Length: 349
Ligand SMILES: NC(=O)c1ccc[n+]([C@@H]2O[C@H](COP(=O)([O-])OP(=O)(O)OC[C@H]3O[C@@H](n4cnc5c(N)ncnc54)[C@H](O)[C@@H]3O)[C@@H](O)[C@H]2O)c1
Image (cartoon, rainbow, N blue to C red; front, side):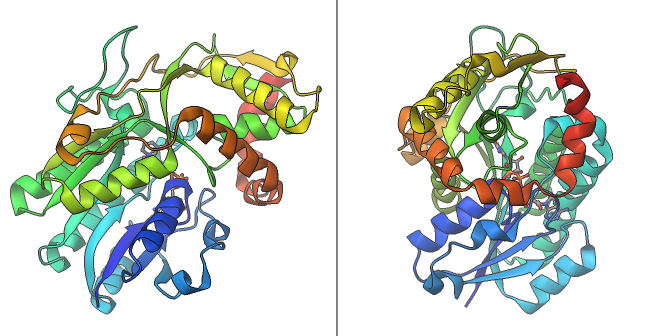
């Protein structure tokens, strides 16, 4: 029996993917790896039903560790790889670009190298991001042929990894896919990202930091719809192909913040959650103004479309965070507190 190797299983999208995959394919097994950085939390997988837990095996491993990754391939027959593991927070990449180069570029390179040696025809799916395309003006959208033009160390490291993935297809014929998705939201997202950060701070009546004028535009997609798309590309995509994934659901950051405030007020009846908590803070350097994805290719070639409407998805996400306040406090109890204090504390006053 062979395993699907999934990296980054203790993070936001990786853990959602494990739930999705084991539920959908009752005969399949996953070997999940994660270095358990500040963003990785095994508690994210604690709600797997007992029967599904038996089809999931976890190995703590750093993707940059050649020996550790090789050991996994030697011990377990791997049928293919879905690669989520990454340093993923743009702000952190501005403060510490080195760890992004290490994990996102060298780590991906290491996985590709082991895949080339051991996969024997199995496929490699690189989970990438729309941020590799750079920024847009008021109109237009990114297609798969839009030139790469990343602006942050995070997006530059993801673009570099994408190029390595393509090189392994062109040079060695490794069957690869690259997916580039817009902003995700949903359960288990680490509370340094916009939506869970705003929910947590609002519930605690703390300032709600908004970069600059808050009019940066992002296209939001529910995490399960992203997992579905990855699954579909892995099973039915054309090797060597790039697939953009997006929700056609553009929002200015400031409008998302106001929406969360009003939904939280409705759900909790707490009038202390209101727009007076909003604080405009100095904009992030190199901050991309607008992202929008043209997902025509995956829709027409593979028949994918988002299943969860934004009003349903955002309300259920807010309800999830309301019922998982312990999880939130638990996952941020360590290093994140320090990062938040050092980088936002002073500006929020
Ligand atoms: N969150 C989004 O909106 C979004 C959108 C498009 C693409 N993506 C991509 O999806 C992937 C997952 O994103 P996420 O939001 O779940 O990120 P996340 O930060 O929540 O999770 C990343 C996981 O990778 C693990 N990890 C980090 N460095 C590692 C290393 N050296 N070795 C092994 N594991 C390591 C972390 O412990 C964590 O569990 C990333 O590749 C990201 O670029 C994210």
